[in-house]
Image (cartoon, rainbow, N blue to C red; front, top):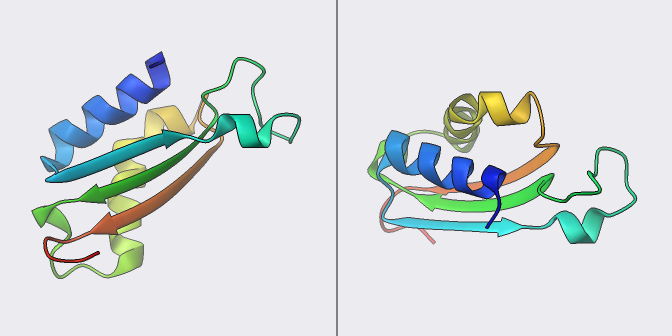
Length: 90
């Protein structure tokens, strides 16, 4: 696991105390595309389930995650796919 992966994991865990957190480095599928780093760790898919998302619309949930990862999104992280779920959702 690289530094960006670990930062995503740490920040989301600290901010949301998720009951489910899946992080997939999808950078290899984007090799050669604009924004893709030769060193990888530029594209990630995240599934996060947490009480903090209860009652919030999908866009608000994604914004909560994006705010938490603002530093990474401003720099090395080019693309982030987020599926944010409340408890009991799939």
